[in-house]
Image 1 (spheres, rainbow, N blue to C red):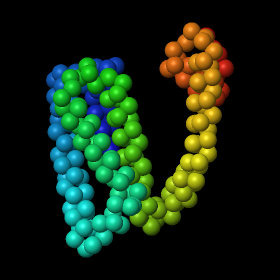
Image 2: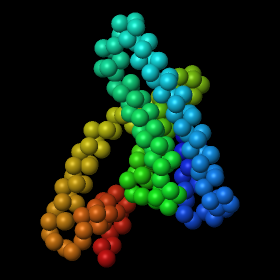
Image 3: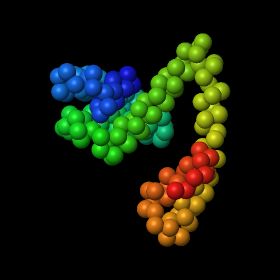
Amino acid sequence: VANFMAIIFITDENAEFWQFGESLPLLLANIISLSVWLVAMFLEVTQIVGYVSVGLARRYMTGPRHWFDVVVVLLTGAVSIALLRLSQDSTQDLVFCTALGVLIICKWGRFLVYLRQLKSIGIQILPITHAMYDIAPFLIVLSIYLLATINMFFALRTGYSFSDCFMLIYRLVVLGDGSVK
């Protein structure tokens, strides 16, 4: 997680204190990221082999936690490889920034799951994470109503693009900012 946080700071177009080596800090952070990713990939593969060798392949394949770990590891590799291939200016691309943001949220979520294993911290975190899982149905219903409202506002042909309609309705519903300019 810390490595990707460093990548965000390095690729910030407003930060001028990182510009001493054009992209040397970014390259160094990416090399560290790829090294950590290779270790994580090796550990995930050995975990799969362990489950299969003991005859628990079905248990591994049906566990959502395992699928989440595999997706996070694959997304980590995709973002790291894309970062290696992109120039520093390309890292401001919307798709790349979205993937990096989703990856960091997933990594922080995994970190909370790992902290639950420590008794002193886990006892404090467990009710919070359980409550977050319990509000998932509410968030799905809220998302449906939010998307329906965005679609209705877009259908009124107000002259706004769909993304502008999304931001206007999001600001109105979630943030309580009622100005439609």
